[in-house]
Amino acid sequence: MRKIFVLDTNVLLHDPSALTRFEDNHVVVPIEVVEEIDRFKRDPSEKGRNARQVSRLLDQLREQGNLADGVTIDAASGGTLKVVFCRTETLAQLPPELRAGNGDNNILAVALEQRLEQVMGSRPPVVLVTKDTNLRIKADAVGLIAQDYTTDKVDIADLYPGVCELWVSADQIDRVRAQGGLPLADLDLTAAMRSLQANEGVTLVDQAQPNHTLLARYSGPQAALLPLQRASKVRLGRIQARNREQTFALDLLLDPAVPLVTLVGKAGTGKTLLALAAGLHQVADERVYERLLVTRPVISLGKEMGFLPGDLEEKMAPWMQPIIDNLDFLLGGGEETTGHQGGRGSPRGPRNSWADLKGMGLLEVEAISYIRGRSIPRQFMVVDESQNLTPHEVKTIVTRVGEGTKIVFTGDPYQIDNPYVDAESNGLTWLVERFKGQPLAGHVSLLRGERSELAELAANLL
Image: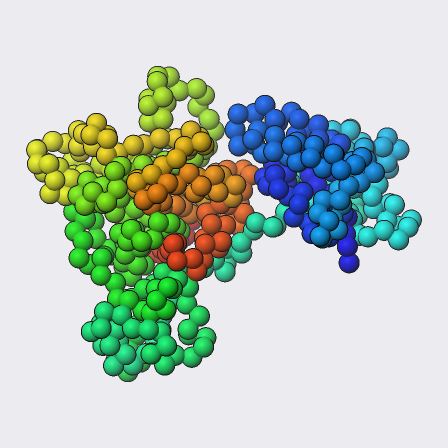
């Protein structure tokens, strides 16, 4: 049955294309939403850009007819759009506590009016769509159906893990190892066991002797299982894989044929450290890429401390300190070093080594706020804490990638500081789900913490 969806402002700011995502249903935009969009359009952040995009879309639809009477969004689907005013008499029907006439209450009144018209006639059911939890509670209290905007949501419990196990015979394991790869069809597996995704990590387990295993990766274009090679052959200084998932992750990070890698895991699983180690090795040692570019969203854990003094680099220092800490560990961590992984040989401390890499143009650390409009070719790019990004921001970042660039997104969906996304609607999980099975992308969910015994216990108990 076709429905009437009344949209809140935060839905359009979260996804400026939301107006077109309701197929053959009727979309109602309260005039209060248009007013709030107008107030956001001068904002220099992503919300301002989204607000301007919504205004342009509404203006394009306005050319088709009067928005107050309703216009067709898509002729193929038959969906329509109307812009509706909040009537004073409808607002008076709300409970006394909700008659103040603020933005949320006006939107609530529009939805209530649509519902009253539906009750009096044969109109479709009315649903208020908002990402505001409190507004959904208010709507429920006055008898309205309210829903979250779930078009870009991913069920975190069913998030693609990127790894699996296949129980096979010892002969099949030996054939994969000896031949350097084996077509999946030659393994005599069931149809369910053949449903692997491109670049998925596979642990081949001997049915007769479970301790006999082989780590492999499924190649989508070749439809074959290939044994892992890069993680064991490449030396990353002090860094080595400590568990199976880290081995799969390193193999993806060290493979230039996979330009997009996503690493998801709780605190201490080694997401950022592995990405930086693989990036430094391929930039400074193998010269596969020209520069290691590291960035992260500028979102604080707690209360803001106000404006930070100094130039741009000094202002960015507190936000980038976690990245610098990992780089310091990779470059020597307080011991005398010989440069990066057998590199340029002088007994300099890690801080000086980090500065040297930056001075030579091999390393760049910057805020993600300034990435729009850039084209980034031949670089190894790490986007840390990407669970704080919206799906649209992730799209903006990935579309900056130029020829020969590899981009790695790391993050923990359960540690989100951005108030506008959650574990199921953030850009990282959305990216994992959308790129699942693509030959150019790989993903690993890291499960075991390796930072310290205390950190692993805290991540599990707290």
